[in-house]
Length: 447
Image (cartoon, rainbow, N blue to C red; front, side, top):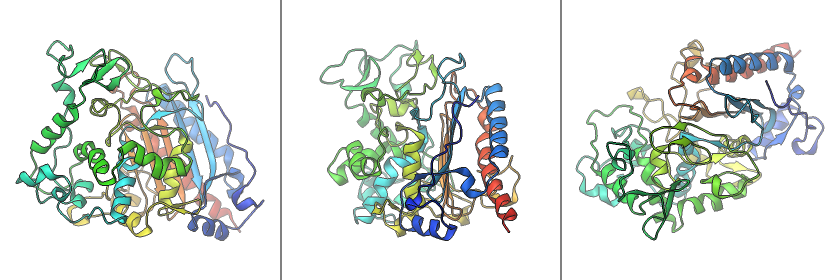
């Protein structure tokens, strides 16, 4: 089932053949980059881990939770496990490869707008506790929005509507495109390619903003996940930085971090890597979605958005998650201040039973007391850990206390988003748990 073995690279941390955990943690605290390492360097039972992971993944494929998947584990800055399983689709033609590019869906939220927002907080251009209308001017005229803070919005505590299906504005009752919004030929007013051969009106984003600005806000201030603000963050980031959102991210984060395939619109960039398909769309695109963002709202923004749209490999993801786990530093370069990253990755409204950080997801409050079936994510993760999941079947998680980064990539929406066995089988958290337990077992065995 697997298409590769556990990576057997030399132990490369700091150029030494071996080192104590104390030294490893020191290198992490200084923002060392990721290295490849033997899994045996941590005295783990690799055969047991192999068997357990294989069993869970095989069961997932058998139950059509996904046609294929990929897992990457980094411990103390060392990639000790990176495996690919299964195929791109259930026809078993294209095996999953370690350098495949995935549609990350909502993982985009913490790897797209969030690093930019954190840097803008560092630069004094954003204040978490000022009304967001200070920066997003249309909200000054909205009685129910003018006093909402960026802190409330990022913690999903503001009462914003969870989701608006903007695709409904572009399609007729018979499913055909409304010509004033979508066309199959580009021109000066239709330059943004929503999908291959489908162009959206340049100013459709302003229609989306107007609808968001007028959307209702709940008076009951409690945790309610909403992606609406992430649709407007790219415009705000562009206004505050003077650069296009995607260009700013490339210049400030992705390129210096060495994330070679990471970004938006991969189909336009001629990568050698294969791109894993997502859904066989019968409503909008009427074909297999591959290399173009699965999320319809992001698609209507030309594929460059804050709620979805990022694509990348597991290696790319591991680099930025390692930077987060090291509280803003990687390979000796400071990207975000330690204070800001700790603030964003901390629970904001525990008194309201809201587990969220600022943009980041967090474990359930009593997570370590729960069974695997009830916990989120694995029960063993620390309270300091954080990450995010994606609708397409992606998941990233960083645990500073245990110095562990976990990446899970799949295309669970193939051939349809109705496939929900990834969730019901608790696959992502079950695999995460294997490694926590393996490290605990190794600790117990150590004399």
